[in-house]
Image (cartoon, rainbow, N blue to C red; front, side, top):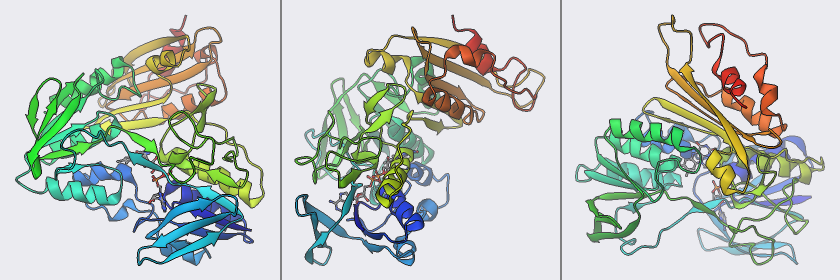
Amino acid sequence: MKTVIIGANHAGIAAANTLLDNYPDQKVVMIDRNTNLSYLGCGTALWVGRQIDSYENLFYTNKEAFEAKGADIRMETTVKGIDFKAKKVSCESADGNVYEESYDKLVLATGSLPIDPKIPGNDLEGISFLKLFQDGQGVDKQISDPNVKNVAVIGAGYIGVEIAEAAKRRGKEVRLFDVAPTSLASYYDPWFSEDMDKNLEEHGIEAHYGERATAYKGNGRVEAVVTDKGEYPAELVINAIGFVPNTALGKEHLDCFANGAYRVDRHQQTSDPDVYAVGDCATIYSNALQAETYIALATNAVRSGIVAGHNIGGTPLESIGVQGSNGISIFGYNMVSTGLSVKAAEKNGMKVSYTDYEDLQKPGFMKENAKVKIRIVYETESRRVVGAQMASADDISMGIHMFSLAIEEGVTIDKLKLLDIFFLPHFNQPYNYITMAALGAK
Ligand SMILES: Cc1cc2nc3c(=O)[nH]c(=O)nc-3n(C[C@H](O)[C@H](O)[C@H](O)COP(=O)(O)OP(=O)(O)OC[C@H]3O[C@@H](n4cnc5c(N)ncnc54)[C@H](O)[C@@H]3O)c2cc1C
């Protein structure tokens, strides 16, 4: 059995490793147009902001590791087209060699592409995206240039906020733009995002929410960003307004979701039984929504790759669905969430209630202590937990995984009220914030 995997980043790597590690009879061909693989984009802001020493450890594997496992891996090779009937992909390598590769099973792991706002001036120098390692290198180089004094970040999602922090850490004047009224508007309710906004402001980042970039001005190189409310100097613009699934190769042949992602079942199988899709190019099942959705995260990419690998290898395995759990840590302030915010639930037509609680993380007598806040979101009628958000200067991240499992398992808010949660002053209060929030639910 020969499996061709198009795309050798997080999702493709997970599918390949699953096949190579568990099914020795499988022949695996991996094809990717990039020069590198396994780059952790989440490290870009840490590196650009000099919170880590270099980018070198942001790659967790390499071509040689796959060759050692017996894979045939071709980097700098672009798949130009797929003949789904003849089960062949046409490839072009960097040296211009054009050839076809046949498959028994095909895994599409072509990921996502950054959204280009396509506004006047977007071909000027100094306008960057933040997706590939090469993008990170480009941004880092420009931030190192003393002539770059003003950095404009377009999009205040987690990538925009992280790179705004990094640019500020490098001493730049940073302006952060978003059409939404707060930062992180897709993941958190305003009760949380407004804390992040305050945090950004206290660290000197100038936020322009409710403002849409309409043009870039400059002469060869960008000099200013124009919005519907004003004009601001910028020698570097970083576009971080989101991603679209990269589905050019299969969109004519395969069923696609509203945003263009390949629709897959719980085995990662597309509408063509010999073709699987994984990671950012595919849909995913949301347990909170109880429906198919699109959530581009490395964690989902890896899990979906593992599921596809086992199904192709011969072990039927269904995805258990996801909650879209995520976290962000900016200037020492940590926010984590899973499932749906109130806003996201309502946008999806769900009737939800929520319960909030705010307190110190540990008993008042503990010297090292920080505030913590929590919101649990549950379906009003069924009382099923569908989301949770938590924030603190302390590391409260591990608690969110319990909510992830609660959503996955359809646990009700009432089950959390008297849940056995331990108490030790080093970690929490006898009346801990999770219990208190749950008890507060009507
Ligand atoms: C700055 C940044 C920070 C992030 N931080 C986090 C984080 O903290 N946590 C988290 O979970 N996620 C994070 N993400 C999201 C995460 O990186 C993506 O969800 C993940 O990369 C998806 O993996 P993938 O393998 O599906 O797709 P991709 O990473 O997009 O990889 C697709 C691969 O397919 C190849 N390809 C595409 N078309 C072709 C073709 N025609 N021929 C050959 N090769 C092709 C590409 O070269 C690429 O290597 C971040 C993303 C960015 C950009």
